[in-house]
Length: 620
Ligand SMILES: *[C@@H]1O[C@H](CO)[C@@H](O)[C@H](O)[C@H]1NC(C)=O
Ligand SMILES: *[C@@H]1O[C@H](CO)[C@@H](O)[C@H](O)[C@H]1NC(C)=O
Ligand SMILES: *[C@@H]1O[C@H](CO)[C@@H](O)[C@H](O)[C@H]1NC(C)=O
Ligand SMILES: *[C@@H]1O[C@H](CO)[C@@H](O)[C@H](O)[C@H]1NC(C)=O
Ligand SMILES: *[C@@H]1O[C@H](CO)[C@@H](O)[C@H](O)[C@H]1NC(C)=O
Ligand SMILES: *[C@@H]1O[C@H](CO)[C@@H](O)[C@H](O)[C@H]1NC(C)=O
Ligand SMILES: *[C@@H]1O[C@H](CO)[C@@H](O)[C@H](O)[C@H]1NC(C)=O
Ligand SMILES: *[C@@H]1O[C@H](CO)[C@@H](O)[C@H](O)[C@H]1NC(C)=O
Ligand SMILES: *[C@@H]1O[C@H](CO)[C@@H](O)[C@H](O)[C@H]1NC(C)=O
Ligand SMILES: *[C@@H]1O[C@H](CO)[C@@H](O)[C@H](O)[C@H]1NC(C)=O
Image (cartoon, rainbow, N blue to C red; front, side):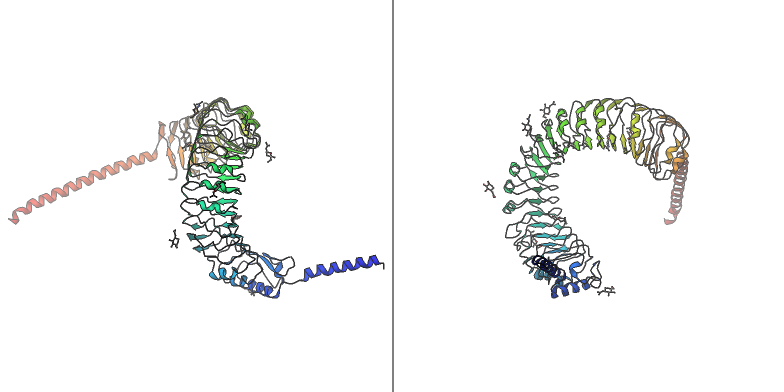
């Protein structure tokens, strides 16, 4: 054997030995015993640990050990069905623990023993009790020198928070979301001031946002949404130079949105919707943001001219405010969602929107927009929702919109659109609402080819002709207040909320096959010229609650419907109402008994008086 071969063999051997040592290295004796004890303690829970099947605890589900397999570093006890905390003292013996996850169990308290003993594990970095049944006040933590992440979210803990968390020395992420905490937003969150994430949403915190929070200079995420906070946003929040996410939604905050926030170069996501903010929209606020939601406030004034043009901005929701003026025409091509609905904006829809090829939602409803719908919107090829309802738009619905292959929702109702409905309709539509316009002509037959259309509302136009055949996936059909006539096609079985054909020119017998719509709740055929009898089969429609047949030319006897159905039949001269007859008969009976009753009491009174008179002389 050559030298070279010798050395190679030797190398191989040592490699083999090395790798061996890794495989055979055992958990230290005491940790092994601890884990076996633990597995027995957890025996009647949903714990998957079974020492008889797998002797090496490092191979158990939810256990992670150090690379050399000598020490347990992570315990994930999520969803183990834990309800009592007996086992906690055992766990706290594992002094090498870095990660301890008790989430998704039914624990009701964090015992003092846990704080006192587990608090001594200096390597512990992450601790989660989220999604348990913890109640009562927050315990005062001490020890936990290395704890960086504390997650107590989704429990029912209550009371205020003052100094309970101030003992932490390394805390970076605190999650107390979805509890019942009250009092002020805590400001003592670890003396080391290293906090990066503060998640306090869905609690009952009150008072104002404390300015002291800026002493945590490393904060990059603050979520205070869904609390009872009032007052205004402190200007100094603009000093948080690492802030990326700020969520203040659903509180009672007011005042103006501070301009200082537009100085935070790292801020990407800012939501302050559902508050009482007033004043203007600060210029430059979108300079660095990708996501901005200021909807449901009382913001007024103009949208600053460069507000929509910032290249980072992707989602912008300013709906439900009092903004006025026109929509800025300078828009960033990167916009994905733009919601400006329910404001007081006027002017027309900028043609420049044609450049927005990434735009999925364009919602400008309930404003005072004028002019036509720009045909160029057909270039917004990613559009899923187009809502221009409740404006003063005129002109025709552009035929070009048929090219919007991703469009699912098109709402153009309550405008002054005229002309005919285009022959071609966006193919993926599920909701089409073009009610209350001035549309004429007939309903295009292409509508029967829309396989996803479940809501169609064309009511309140001047449409004529007949319904063009079966629309296969309809759930609700509103065609009232038009000039439609002809035969009513077979309706799809899925039709289950409303079928409204009222105030049209339909005539002839009511098609009895409508009775096959077993999920239908409301059927309105009023104000037409339907004649003949009410189909008896209608009484068997299982979910019908409202049947409106008034003002037609129906005749015959009204069938007897179950009591859940409210029927309106007035204005049909030929119709005989058996229930009405019954009521009249009942009325007569009541009348007779009234007369009888009145007669009887008169008689008794007379007799009484007579007896009184008779008795009088005897007393004298
Ligand atoms: C776990 O409990 C079952 C019955 O509940 C019992 O048969 C089994 O021996 C127990 N296992 C251990 C390791 O204690
Ligand atoms: C906080 O809670 C404690 C204990 O319930 C109570 O004594 C204290 O008054 C509360 N502090 C505030 C500011 O509400
Ligand atoms: C708690 O908040 C932190 C920081 O925001 C987050 O990373 C974590 O996923 C949250 N926990 C739960 C259970 O949602
Ligand atoms: C905020 O920053 C400004 C300017 O950098 C500074 O003058 C001010 O003292 C800071 N305020 C706080 C509370 O840190
Ligand atoms: C549109 O906005 C961009 C970015 O804010 C700006 O650079 C550009 O000058 C603006 N264009 C017009 C015509 O105002
Ligand atoms: C639009 O509204 C603004 C502010 O309310 C007003 O000054 C302007 O005259 C209006 N423009 C039109 C075309 O109505
Ligand atoms: C649109 O989205 C794509 C993919 O998310 C992205 O690469 C692109 O920069 C965006 N902007 C434009 C104008 O296409
Ligand atoms: C229309 O906007 C006004 C003003 O913002 C609002 O009060 C109203 O509720 C909105 N209507 C609808 C149907 O959303
Ligand atoms: C359609 O428009 C009508 C007004 O004509 C409105 O009441 C209804 O809520 C709208 N439905 C949808 C789904 O847009
Ligand atoms: C049916 O449509 C008419 C006219 O559009 C409307 O007045 C009526 O309220 C609708 N009926 C029902 C039950 O919604």
